[in-house]
Image (cartoon, rainbow, N blue to C red):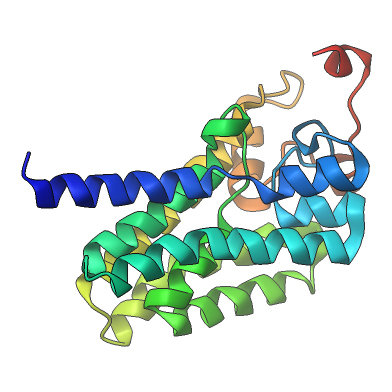
Amino acid sequence: MSPKILKQALWILLGYLCGSVSFAYLVGRVGRAMDLRRYGSRKLSASNVYTFLGFGGMALAGILDIAKAALPTWLALRLGHGLAVAVGAGLAAMVGHNWPLFFGFKGGRGISTALGLLLCVFPWGALWILGWVAAGRLMPHAAAAPALLGFISLPFFAASLGQPSATVWACLGMLLLTIIKRLEGNRQPIPPQEGTWRVLWRRLVLDRDIADFEAWIHHRPNASEQAH
């Protein structure tokens, strides 16, 4: 392996390690002494922080999660590693956020880290995703659906604006990671009474396992879950 390729691989690994630092987990632990992987949607995400710690906690976790993807992406560009390595580091940070090495590979859904990457290489794309996320606030019980549409349309939006191929491929990578993470459901078993295909459809479109939105976001662990 050439020194150049080794440096590029190490930079992408750095992106993954940065992404694996879950600020949502840390905010939950410091603010309420709770493990968010057992509460609400079980996601280590700003939205789950908001449910249990309010707007301040959500803003703190969200900003830091954006920064942990923006930093390796921006540094890669700044140090002359090129756009492909920069987007590779940003995507690796998204992988780390979704499957964090330090938190049992149970993380978030990657929206904040996607924004961090896009802010460095395609700011209009960050605004595009934010617009879809904001649209989801108008229909909170199905807010995940517009966010998914935002990621589906993002590669086409990037291509229509003449973005470099590395950026378009990065947008496709974000979409793929989003779909995989939603279907995987943070390694939660599929409730047998719900039906496998029904749960997978809800996970993909609504980002939850059950029809009852309030029960999903306000879930609290039972005694057996607490024991583990």
